Length: 433
Image 1 (cartoon, one colour):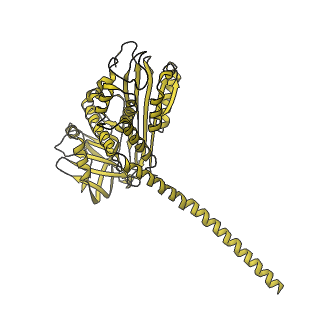
Image 2 (cartoon, rainbow, N blue to C red; image 1 turned 60 degrees about the vertical axis):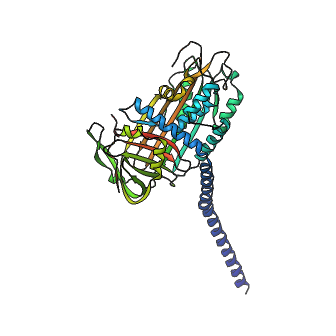
Image 3 (cartoon, one colour; image 1 turned 90 degrees about the horizontal axis):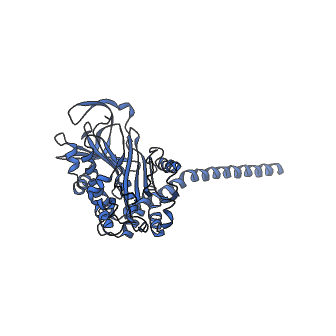
């Protein structure tokens, strides 16, 4: 009897230990699987809520600015591929706008299409937009960085209110450096390199003696297609150039359920990434419509109408060339002047007294430089951009059913929640010139 009792106690102990081990394994499994998914779901919900709450007025302003800017670039670079991040450019200029006053502020507001939005509203909506893009998708890596670099002699007179606004609303880092030291150039380029995951290693070559401040934005994007292109189906095919000649391109191929539109002027297809919140939109003008004339007619009304007409299509065949573009460093002074910001570049007329007092020399925009790069392949898309606004102080008086993309096309990468265009470009020759 005692032996049986002892065996029974031992069995109960063994059973208890087994149950405890099973519980530990289950807890570990739940911890590894359930909680990350729960946390991810919560992060997505917060991100989506912020994105949908961004004021459509700002999104509309950014879209109008993006299309107007692209049309100006088209006039300057008609015979080359173009790729930019309009959001990077508008964000860098929005930070600069925080220091503009008088007619300079009015001119920048008109160029950026801010309308009746107050500075506080603009900053608040940009802040929400930036926050909404932080956790957009596990399959999409999207990084936004902002920074202000001040010449050490200039820093003492910079208004704390200006730095506070760009820091709070745009998450901007602030650096004070010796602009005469070559290491400062290396440090600025290092910042751009880190904030674009190594895609843009140089944005500044030197710092002129007239420069007292740089305002910089960097954007990095890497997204995986929802429906990938099978590498085994990628084949050399003809791509028709504007002059009628052809080049061989690596044409990717896939099929699936995509949103698609075909009309009198063009075909449009939406190619989504990750969890289907961010997508590439490919606009393919019909054969009797030139790409340049199509882009020239693409105002916000026409753009939004094309997007609204997209309809789900089952088993749409999509053929898209693999391509990569490196555009810039592109100086945007001319196109921004054409869009109405000329006074901001004028050493005598510009008014950036919101940055610092101007009794020691007037402040003006010396240059706005932009560089962007994109690579599109079977897995997805990788893109990056940096915009630099150089603020100078006047001293020396210097003034500075089947969708086959086998012909030139326009495209954009868009956050469909807020409607914000992150990147946009035109491709004349996918294999370069």
